[in-house]
Length: 180
Image 1 (cartoon, helix red, strand yellow):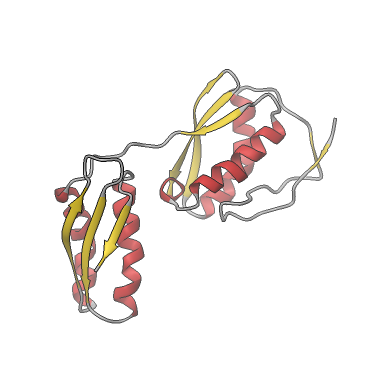
Image 2 (tube, helix red, strand yellow):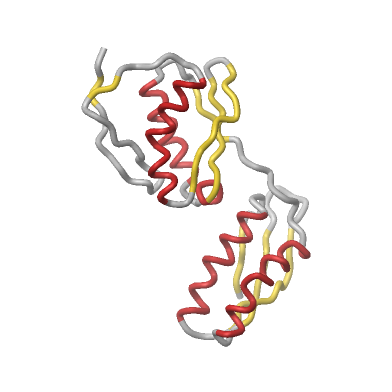
């Protein structure tokens, strides 16, 4: 049986597929899952990410988003609307696709300071500074980091995204980063 294919090539968490006009269904196996993931990887890699198989348990496929995709705000949409949709389309036996998240390092003030030390030289040259004000709910389900960023100009303000990204890569459990 041949199915019409989707002709989409975005990686904004909504769609990731671009295929030929038809595709034959595959049987559920690690090799088949890799074939489908290989179709999607160029779009993930273009944004600094990737995906890997953690395990296949019956009709459930467990995957891990890696690199930038692991900490991306659109990772849930990427997994559900892009990867899971395409896997289930190509491998009808799959009942569910589950994202396995890396627990990462336990958040600590020492660890956050190490991350901040990586950006402080740039901020100093640009006339700014960054300070860890506090960390709350560290052992709870949604840790919060409060930072004080000083300085003016576009360079100082744009570094917020980079700081947040670096902290979240190292400490995926951190739920919120607040700049004051």
